Amino acid sequence: MEREAPSELDARDPGFWPREGGIPSDLLVAKSLVYDLSGFTASRPAPEAESAEYGAYAFTLDGLSVRFRVARTTPTKVGQFVTVWKRSTAGPIEPFDAEDPVDLFVISTREGQRFGQFVFPRDVLCERGIVSTNGSGGKRGFRVYPPWVTTTNRQARTTQTWQLNHFLQLPEDGPIDIARARALYHACGPICSARPPRSDM
Image (cartoon, rainbow, N blue to C red; front, top):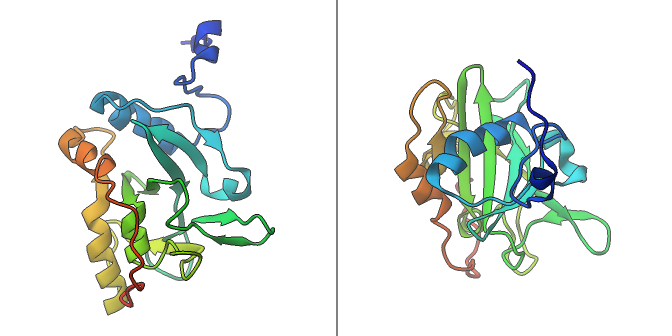
């Protein structure tokens, strides 16, 4: 069956998501399974070219600024790795900061038929030392541990424990927990305070 071509009206609609054009399949599936069914209003995603290998896109969802990434499996460590950096005005890359206009970092993770998203509010990643505060601290990338991963050391287990508080399972052949999706996507708290980063990362 041939796919229906988007209409001229669709192409002008800022909320229209074209299936051709590079939007990661994980993000398209999330729109179908989560955003549409939850009644979220999402703008058309814009690519972030410098992190294209991690499926980097930016969009707004119910007025919240979202940065989307696809985590990648690495050969020697459990879990998956993802980059979360920006280009500074001076040129070098640097971590996102508490003052940046970003509300949520959504990290897609998949292994075979297992699929889900971490939905991290900015202040949570600030508390965990991933987002910087006033230009101090922060990380350019970090590992995520979805529930199907068996962690192999105490630090990874500790990290997995707090990360799973922000995880949304996305079974493509079963129902989505819409109440959890709404809670995670609207859990954005106040601007990060100037607390020192935690040491249990």
